[in-house]
Image 1 (cartoon, rainbow, N blue to C red):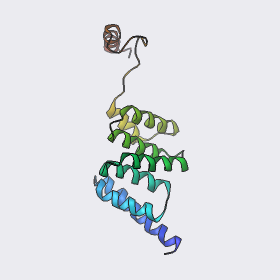
Image 2: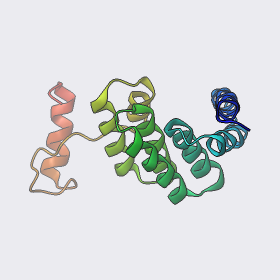
Image 3: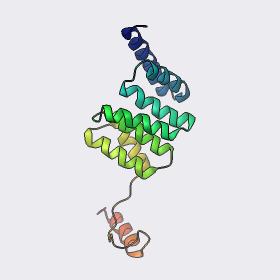
Image 4: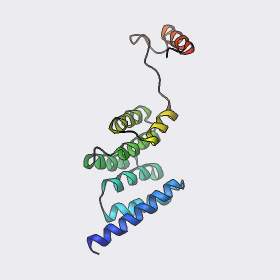
Length: 151
């Protein structure tokens, strides 16, 4: 098969994968993204394939590797940060996911990342950083300031 035909097949599979993800069928999307990434190594194919591999097969390290490869090739693409952050969330690494999402948002707005960050929720900074979060001064003063609207 020539390059143009391979690229056309890859685009078609990628579009089918995106549709499957919108429909909530990440297993079908995995198959489509895998076919697309085998036909062409475009960063966007790798990014979505990495996310689906981590989510459906539990191959978190492979998913992180694929998304990292996509980020190396296209460091300005917010979608790669979204997919990498989703992998970290699925793996239970909430702090790492938040870090990746924030790096993505620094490049530009993305509604999905914003929605995920809102769903995760982030804590306000400590009132007294030298004390632990469980210290009564931090705990109750923080609640008081939030109640009166200063946090």
